[in-house]
Image (cartoon, rainbow, N blue to C red; front, side, top):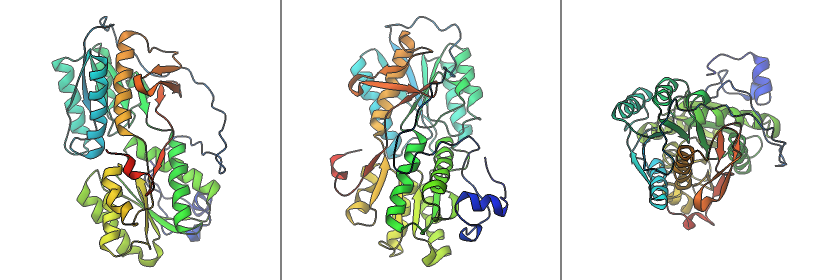
Length: 369
């Protein structure tokens, strides 16, 4: 992860001039290559990649047979993963020959997540669905599952490709980055200053989004000022406190806060509300419609970027079923995903749910999750 001090030149390239930056430290992004979308939304050419996932070793023939899956998300007990779990149960009921149990840590802790997965390997399951708290740290236990003949399907937050078969990606990272940055620019202006509340610097999907946001902002909104990125785990109180600290620290300079998690975004909106800064500080982020509805209705939040997490969980179960049946295998170009239709395979071993969606006052009441 990037936690190094940048030279003045590096900062100048990142987001305009170095003098526009309030800090000389860039935190929260990963070191992978970026592919920012065109400023005008023109779709770029997508180069096909060979399958880069892994396969279970000596897996028994499970085609058409009952499939027992365990879902181990980053944490349980929050609205987002309640929604993915609902989608999984919907898919299992629809398929009729799949049983899914959701179990996991109550805090976004990678060590606890590894322990949960390891315990289910010992107990014996046909497949593991996971949303990784750490891309690299989770890999050994997933490889252990594969070596035990257990299917491993990621969703929401990826592991290294060589430690799972498939990853169901909610939306491409550069698409989310564009939606987030464009909406923030629309609300605070091309020279507005913003900060970010994320979970941790090692959480893979958020680190990827932030890296793509940086690249897109550099190309399309170069005068926006990046003040700071702070960690808040997936904790509501810590997220609220971090947002409140940013508000107090930067005062009138702070024009916007990005929430990178379904917890950080409503907590940031609550911090802005309690500080009496609605209309002065914009909150743009990723969260569920139900958690953001009060803030959207009060006009404190204008836009929420997300996808349907119910559909994400639903697609993950269909991917596991298809992999077990031998219908989804290396070289596949699409997944037949029930009511979702055909979902494309991209980047070698990722199944793409679709483009991000922006919830606002005009449409938020159409969704209940």
